[in-house]
Amino acid sequence: MDGYYQMPKALIYQERYKGLSTEAKVLYCFMLDRRSLSAKNGWKDERGRTYIYFTVEEAMELLRCHSQKVTKLMKELEDEMVALIFRKNKGQGRPSIIYVDLPVTV
Image (tube, rainbow, N blue to C red; front, side):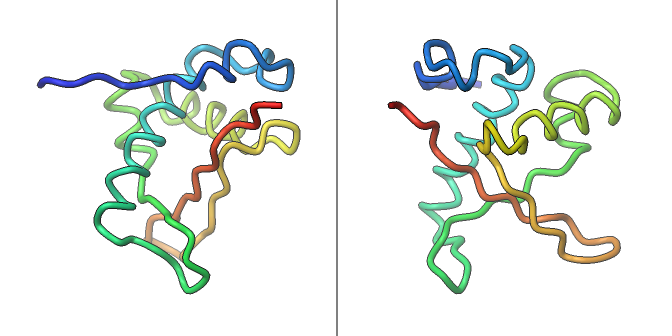
């Protein structure tokens, strides 16, 4: 497959992201890439915010790890101090929608 993933420099240089594991940063890059595809496809909620679907199983396959690890990485990205993603549960058996925010650069 051609192409590449981009990592915002803020994830490396901004103090608020220094505690993020490298794996969480990579997972975030996957989600950020998916966000751009969702935006192109018009996946927006009632408030006009772009969202993605990104299941634990997809993340497990991409990162080649177990579900516990993916859950831990998602929590890193959701942490109040980091706030790079927000998950909204859609109910039993349905995947959560995920809002992927851009990193703070100040």
